[in-house]
Image (cartoon, rainbow, N blue to C red):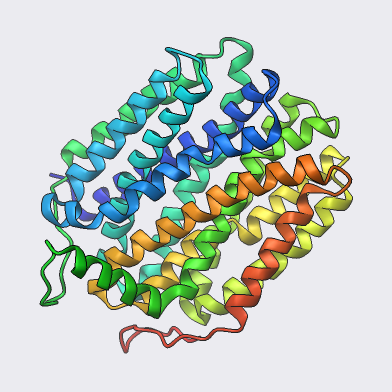
Length: 396
């Protein structure tokens, strides 16, 4: 079996594949449906399928994880993802593709929750920000490369789905060399077979760390609306589909640049300070994007800068949650991070589609700016006491 560091590398590689599949599916299906004459509101609603799948699966993740361990959960989740990706090639129907998105969302949640909990529960407190930043960096890299697959629909519509399915299988197979482990109960005297006990842990985690779940919500809203709505908006304001395929990865690409530095900085000065700074920066940049949206160069620069600021809010939010919660509540906290990410991902494309349909005279980026401001305000007005070891230098 592989070493602990090799295991960490495999886990972050799996997260990268998850990001790749999500980064490909959102713009790829949005472009296909737009070209088939589907309205932007229906297109945006369809994009929520993946995240509805995440939301459906989330409450049922903790007990199976404690019963069978990390490795089987990851293997099952990965198998659901690459199988569903291949099934996109079999039949093109709106409802069938929506079901496949639901299944991919469930598989992604199994994979992401298991890897995220494994990493957060085994990382040393003084290196936690860096390790989770690497986790986010891998997801961001995959998400950056995913939209580039949209260009392959000019060769054959099925080609992106087939190639991504094969790539998922290759990385997924690395898990067979990893030894299975189980999450720690941290000496908590509870009955994990009890639904009442599970809901109590969710309540406790939410009561302590709700503010840390807002950044994953923000990232879900940004990721899904930018990749699910912006291709439609971009085509409607006159941009070419091929150019949009290059613009979209700039957001995730910008996050790659700053993911590690921001994670390390948050280890030193605190997650809350870094989160407030980067969200404020994101608001300013999206206001600028609304001014230069007719310029391809302006959009390229705006997406890169926005990614550098707010492309790391998910990993920062997970780190913040890990600081706030005792170890026995980390599985519940990681599930809630996924749930809030799903809420943002569901709300984002739907609101974005409605915004594009009913406010054609306003920039799509105004909706994003307003959403970020409300989240920034909630974090700014709430302070939390951190649950960290005495050796940690974290402050709020």
